[in-house]
Structures are given as C-alpha cells and as structure tokens.
Length: 114
Length: 114
Image (cartoon, rainbow over all chains, first blue to last red; front, side, top):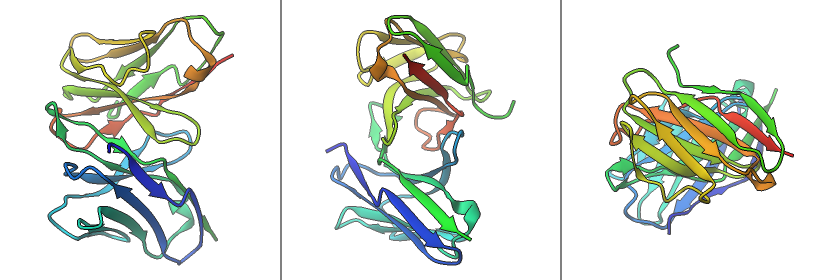
C-alpha cells in the first residue's frame, strides 16, 4: 500500500513534443504528490507538486494532472526540449509520525531528441 | 555553500569494511533525511532526523546501518561490514522542518563494494 507505481521506465520524445509520465498509488492517506527531476551525477530536485484538492497544476511547460478517484497522477512536459532529458521521479507523502515521508516511484528516463 | 553537500562523492571499499558517509544540510534546516538509490530503482527511505533525534529508524535495511547527527547539523551514515548489495547511491536531503514537504537533495555518495 506504500508503493507508487511509475510508467514508462524510459521515454524518447522528439523536440517540441509532449512527454507524459504516469504514476499510480494505493494509499488514500497520501496528501502531497511531488515530481522530482534528476540529472546524471546530481541529486533529485523538486520540479512541481500538487495536493489532492486540485485536479491540475501548471508551472511553465510542466503540468501535473491528478485524478483522485482513479488514484493516478501524471506529469506532462509540453514543448519538450533536449535540456529536459533527465530522470523523473514521482513521489507521494503523508504526515506520518510527524514528518513527510516521501515514497518514490522507480523513475522514468526521458530522452528528448533534437 | 547554499545547498546540501555530501562527502565523499565516490567511495570504493572492500566487502567487510566499514564506511562513513557524511551529509552537511542547508544551514538552518532542522530536518534531515537519508535515502538509498539502487540502480534502476527509486529512492528508498532510510532514516530521518528532527534536530539530533531520529524518531523513525524503520527504514534502515539491517543493523549494520546506523546514523547520527550532532549539533543539529552534520549527519553521518555508517555501514558496518559492508556487503556487495550495499552498493548504491546514498542521498541526503534536508528541509526547514519535518512538516515541510520540500526536501532539498545533495548530489549523493556513490558507494561501490567490491
């Protein structure tokens, strides 16, 4: 029940295209859903996050779509650029024992071809 | 520095040796987290600190793993009698306090156990 399932494992998108990464969860106690971006040799960095009281959040070219009833959320990268090539992790957390314990998906390696 | 720093960046050790991994969080951040990232896997939560206290150690994989934090700042993750399955990237993150969702990650320590 603590798992977050992420797909696809890898993704190749042409420059200018839309990249879509999907995640699903089981635990309805999760109340925070961030996406992290990780470049090779670097630690993950927070990209965008959403709470379950909204169905969509947009920041620039990045959008999270959230479907509470289906327990799914996805990251859409519009007008994908080669600089977006990285590994993306979805995560979920809840206030458990007084702290935000992040449960991560297994990651999606995105390659945006020029 | 402005971000989370970790040392060493790379560590190669022989099976059975002990290793110490260091994390220096962002100044003023009271919460500190350790994660493990194995090849092709997501990030696995190990332990967190609020100040110098570690209320939840349930994520530590075995009793060979221990962590401490002194002065509410630097933390050390120690792995005793290392095994080949301990090979992974060990990531440290910090946040202002444990209830704040945004965790800032360091670049990680890549541990290889031969």
